[in-house]
Image (cartoon, rainbow, N blue to C red; front, side, top):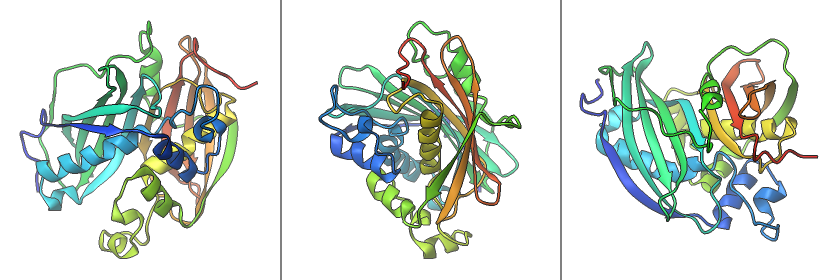
Length: 307
């Protein structure tokens, strides 16, 4: 099997979706994150979306695009491998968001074809809200090396040279030996089902045991985006930044699967940077294996540190 040679440059959308408080609150609640910033609609200034909420409005377009661009046999071999999210601002209630998707690169790798799709989302005024480079490995599939000759989406920090974002992008690097902090995050047996419905992200390998086994898995596994969101919540809390901190970039490389039920050990290391706090983190499964490694960047000039 081979990825179509003309896949790079293909696009889909725009997909227009309305974001309301119900969806934003449900996403945070699925993660067990009950911070007032996510759930208290009477709070001054209202609620904000979790930093990983963009995966919710990107997913329908990802499914539509994959269905149109490649065969079902190839699409079924997709595994989420990397994630690079840039946030201009958090989604909020009342947003009408317009998302487009474009394949920006393909690259043959030993496990299979590595395909990066860029999702760019703007609000009703045409202002950037988020941009995500979503990397997938299509296991056992071949492809040609190709890329769009264009830089990544513009830096979302006004006046920034994006060097903090570049540092955040090195998500696959091995972690230092001694973390600044560590947190145990429970993964309940029903979390994948709850996350599926609250995020509106449905892939049956996360909720249907028969489908998971037919795909070669022993049991259902937690969504990669749910694992990343849990790690980001833990990082914001343990680094004393707070849920509403102005996160500008989240990157990660997925390295393992998370069974249900289980528990994650999320570890973090702070890295001072002139543009703001930079946190390197990983999430370990109960057997000590890394489920992911990532980085999180926060803007200094707007950072709302907890006191």
